[in-house]
Length: 245
Image 1 (spheres, helix red, strand yellow):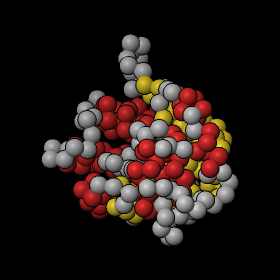
Image 2 (cartoon, rainbow, N blue to C red):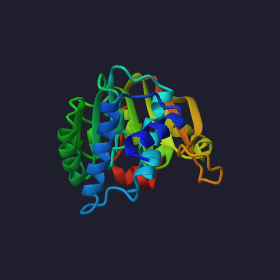
Image 3 (cartoon, one colour):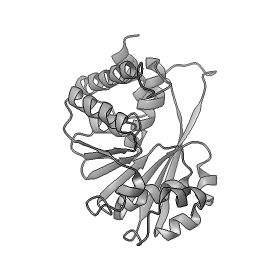
């Protein structure tokens, strides 16, 4: 199957809103850019187009079946190769996206990719989250923060919530053990005057009828922050690592 029909089928199978061909073409182009750069720089272990469409695109865009992103500012903390930030930015042109990563080579790649894609709603920042979270121009300034980072939820809370304005939301992309992570994050949420509003678990689907296909359970956690970030947070990375909240 050609790539565009395949990608459309996979997004449809995952109940993700449909997009016109120009959007799908940009998603195809970003795949090409990632795979080409991946030859000289470690961006992803997933290079097969179908796997990429499921595990990167359907996963990143799963947020859109729950939240209608039409305006506001969103920051992707620890964006890596640009997930979920770039697919979301391609599909939500009226939202302002900030993508942050601590590795300059990844930010340089994303800068080139944004230019190639012709998308104008993305700002890129090379910084560690614990440093940027103290920057007055970024602290408590975003309606949304997102992260697909593999860190525990209690750690992610300290890295991501400083960017969220009061009444804003942090959306954590997690796997099947989200309930356990929530239980171990009670203190971290309390420190940041935050609460888990709701969460959604689902299986990523590849669009086929093969019942034996590998199932990947994903969970989106929606965490609301009620007050401004308390003074002293985020702490230095060494403290966050040695003594999680």
